[in-house]
Amino acid sequence: MPSFNSDLQTPNSEPGTRNSDFPQEHCHETRQRLFSHIVRIGILSDTHGRIESARAGLSALRAANAEFLAHCGDIGGQEIIDLLAAAGAPSVFVFGNCDFDQPALAHYAEAVGVRCEPVLAELELAGKRIAVTHGDRTKLMQQIINEGKCDYLLHGHTHIMRDEKVGTVRIINPGALYRAKQLTVATLDLETGILRFLPIDCPDHSSS
Image (tube, rainbow, N blue to C red; front, side, top):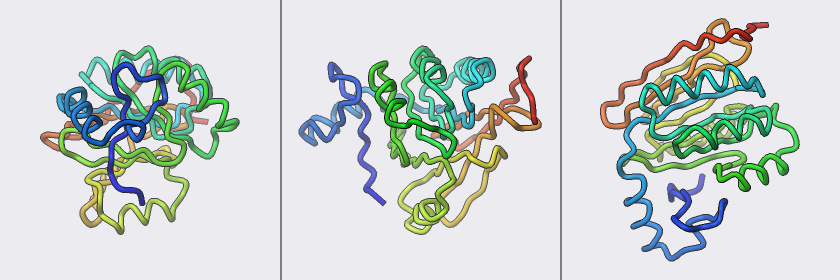
């Protein structure tokens, strides 16, 4: 598993430019300046292109004062990337097993300034190390847990809410915004460790 070096975008960089393109000292200072204030993150997953439920989920996260958004995969299309771009908070997403034409989606995300990490996103926020992956790659999930280098492992895929500590790693699944009995997203306060699941009501919701 790669080491936890945040590659959040730096100011005045082109969308998609990584911190690896800059001197490490500059990257560290930029990261601290831009993201040291982030305490509460919003977590969502498995939107599967459902625009209204994704919009409702993002609205609930922003209303709950989420300062950073992590989407755990199966985004389902460009429209969901557009919603992330317009959400008013920095964000990252990974791909899921139902995300097809991934190169085109990654290119589109870069064009609109949304960070895409195809398989695994590694974040360092509020002094916490966070891994984000979809959850369909069981060997990768187990490797992350076994190595114990992160504080949190965020995933989706099962469409089932989860909050479990395995070894030193706290594993969180926010639930899903499609094909779930109750649509949910989640907020995580990185200072207190408080996790809240937020139910989402949406007219086009179907659990089938």
